[in-house]
Image (cartoon, rainbow, N blue to C red; front, side, top):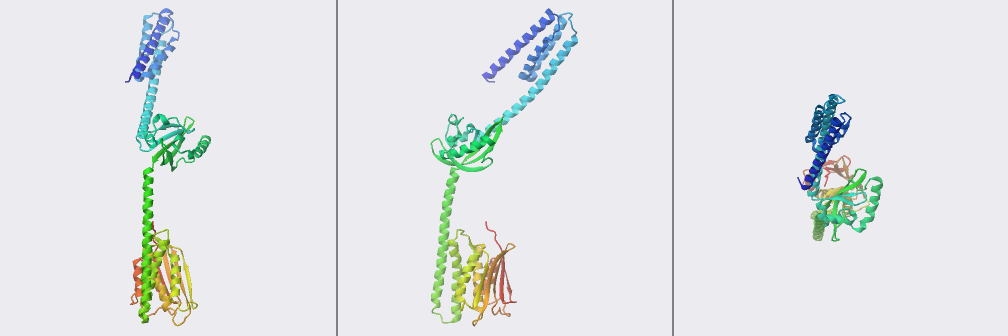
Length: 451
């Protein structure tokens, strides 16, 4: 017990002794001098109530003392103008009122103790929190804060207590804050209540830093308050900037790789083209041209990846349009005889799917142009690519001479068809051939959901 509590307790005892002394004097005067039972005992309730409030159960000794004194005075004073029953009733009331007030006082004390413990726990949590905690009133003045807030902003306790919270923010934010404060005062609503957002703080030394803030509003006794949790995110921002810089460097490196791969493939294509000039055999020349086009089809994918913002995927519909146009100008001896129809959706495909599927498209279109329309035959080639029920459908159709009935496309010596089957299997696709109205190859594969 500290010194202040000792003095307080001594003061209570002194007051109680004075009140009891007055009670004794009143009893003596009315019983022994006036020999009357006038209701002077109403005064007794003052020390009884105070004792119950101050000392709880220990305070029951006061009504017990007053009761004994009252009954004893009845016997010692002789015959009085009233019966003993009246004083016995008063004694009962003394004890009853003292007991009730004691019980209520103990309940209040327990409640106050719980509230005090709860408040102490809250203060302990707030003070030990790594994040800064600050409470401001409706006028924007700081009324409560924890140690972490002082560490974050570099102030001492007496430097911010009761001061405007604007001292913790750069001046360029003051006008916006004042406008939101006026709205809060009028409506009790805050535009950022319940939100977590990033902003800039101002330290004591004048330096600015980024922090993350979560804000809540509440009221007590008709007054409005806001409580905010503040987290210094300077290190996180620095890491994000470093990560962004590293990511940009990796993107540049990846683009450079795509560019070089495209250039190497185009060099291979050019070498094959140069070599083809010295080949007289038509069959060998055709093999060189096919290899050249395969290199071009892969180079086209890397070219689009290099120019795209998405370094993992390309617009495959756009890719088919460009590839089909290049193959048409390469293989169609008389473009006026063959009508090329392209109906494709703009579907983004991952590079792991786009490269093998691009080679498949290259082989199927090349086969139609090379073998479907011999000796000036007229016709059409339809290319369809779309998404259907979470699946991708690729259809290459021509109404040329038709696919040989005695040839099994799944088991053939043709390098092109063997590539088509192998690459389709590689991307978990299924291929079908329909000879009913010409030659139609249909490939189905699952549409991959990329993160």
